[in-house]
Amino acid sequence: MTDLEREERFTRLVHEHGDAVYRYLRRRYPSSDANDAEDLLADVMAVAWRRLDEIPTDAVAPWLFGVARHRLSNARRRSSRRDRISAAQRPRSAAPGAEDEALADLQLREALDQLPEKEREALMLSAWEGLTPEQLAVALGVSVNAAAIRLSKAKSRLLTLLGSGDSESPTAVATGTKQ
Image (cartoon, rainbow, N blue to C red; front, side, top):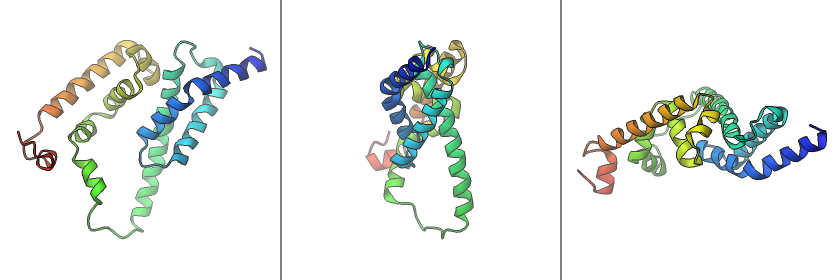
């Protein structure tokens, strides 16, 4: 591949998939600001440029989501370390903010949080990014069968968790939907 062909392929990749990867990063790293997501996107695209010849032509988006997933994981680890270090230096607040409580009370969020990380990731890539099991396999770096099984287990567990909410849960009380 000539330098010009390489640049053209990379430019197409950015134009076709850059926005979707950026939205993925913003949704999966909500505690960050837009600049953090842009920095992560730049990291993903830098990896794509370096490994352009390794990107499967029939699975570009899933491959990019897989790289983005790894970059998010690294960013969360760094953020967690920073938070642990700075937590000892900050005064403790009396109560969380109303917005934090509202988000924490959502039954779906609670159920998603209870899913194992690998299953939650498979479910979110499938639901939010619209990946098929074949594309999911590329993004997760597993076989198609393993991706389909992981997705199936995630859906089943999520339905179980959503169906087993007790009637006195904060969500039920807040929404007036006691069962």
